Image 1 (tube, one colour):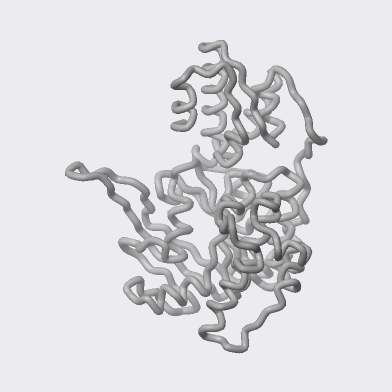
Image 2: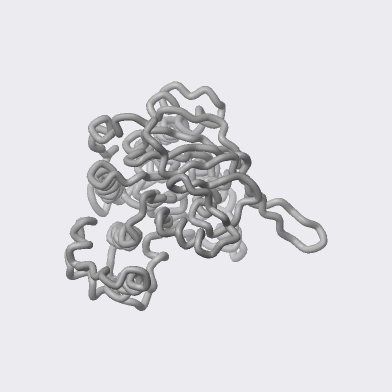
Length: 350
């Protein structure tokens, strides 16, 4: 919205929006699309909207140009074939009453990001889906779990050992067990380093503790379905999906027990997103990797999550088995999140 306001200062005749709503939850997406419609009418302005979401095109556009065939709702591998045998396995990660409040400002302090009494357990080969509107604390939870910020209260227990956030050794241990894949795969890679150099940094880091660590980078890339030829390229020469696969490969080099994906597929088209999700499912079932998947996409959550946790204003408002939460939501926020996709498509056909 701030970027939009900056663009409108000069009252342009043409506004180009490149994937303006792809990384936004469906509730805010619908509100923002209504803003675009209002601006178009008020200022008699033309809008060129670039998107991979068919519902957005149907809702906003007067004319449509397809550069390629639009990928319809993709079909993921049946989640039941990849489910863990029991979610009551001994947890590798246990979070108890985790709290965090960020205050900012000078003499007048204001509250920023907040997380209130978050608790969950994560077993080997299990996927926890965290959903909620933008700005409701999902990414803050992810940052807490990898020690980027320090909780005000609560516990994070890894392999039956509580993490002491005052201990540098404990933070290193936490990050060796829990890895984070950011939303922007391209932005998380150095723009001027080759992929080989980026991955070699992890090799050097691991060798500090394990002198025998000497992975075959070409074989590593095979695990994320990439050819060895990408090793000598930079991120600007790769697609968004390829950059995301590199980010996943880099995280796997630390041999984590838990992989956190923070809106990692939100900016990808359906076909590319399908490939990334299938890759994660294979890692989950083949390596027993536990996954925390933060997303507002119903299809992704339905496809990968065993358990869903819905957040609003930094708190968990509903949780339970994925199918139950999605099909039979009880909280108003959950109902809005999982109903908005259909609402947007229906309104787009009017």
